[in-house]
Picture 1 (cartoon, one colour):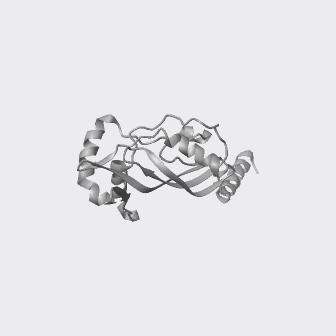
Picture 2 (spheres, rainbow, N blue to C red):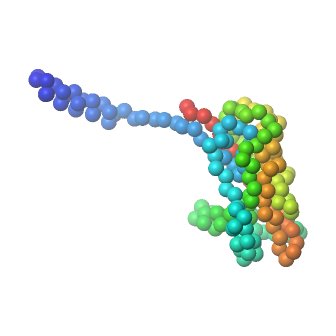
Picture 3 (cartoon, helix red, strand yellow):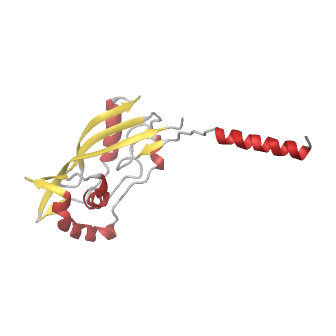
Length: 186
């Protein structure tokens, strides 16, 4: 075989081999939750925050969408549930009622952890727009339940929501769910 022929045969063989090889890469996973916690992977996350200039509009539209988004009774409200084909309504309701007006730039109070973390939790927004009643629903981590709870709580202390007021009465929003999934590259 001449040099050109052997190069062509070699290239064809390499191309066939490349088609038979499947590349698999698993990279980091991050579901960041609604506010920062003291975890090293959280620095790459972005958090939704309602800016001052949109609050007037948000307040106005909350009254228009109250019954579409929330079920309220005796001073407390819960978010309605939506099917997969109702994601636009879900996102609008989340924007109007459970997007913070203030999110801390970085949580403090505990050491930064590098441990993988999968946690789902429930919480409430008080009549004053503060997070309370945090309960861990699912935890998969090398960290203890107490450590994870402190990480979430330290971030939550600094988060503020626009208080929900209907006809002059302040309402709380209960039964909210959130979570963090923070893992490294494998």
